[in-house]
Amino acid sequence: MRHGYSRRPRRMMSPEIADRLLESLRPTRYLLTRSLADMPIGCPEYRQVDRVVQEIDGLAGILTGNATYYYRGGHSADAPDGTCR
Image (cartoon, rainbow, N blue to C red; front, side):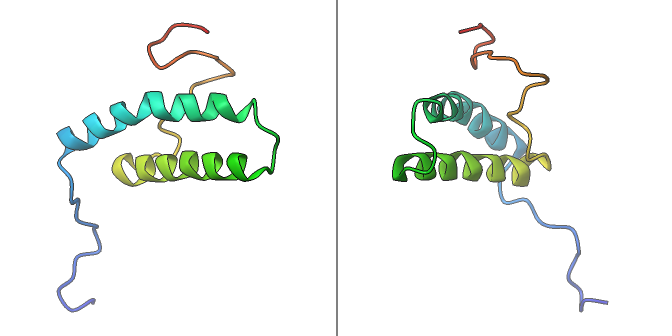
């Protein structure tokens, strides 16, 4: 027994706010991942942008329980609004 502490983590953010936050980060994450293709792998900018993308994915994992929340099936190049670019 853990002295009255619940094993279930307590959510600090309402589901409505979490949904709005995740959707507002979607275009930012998309732009960041697209910009990685134009940078030399390993350069300082690449590492920082990649780190931001990983942090966004980590937040999505915490809020949804799914760290692949932003991933699309297959190898689609869809933009955040569903159009192909």
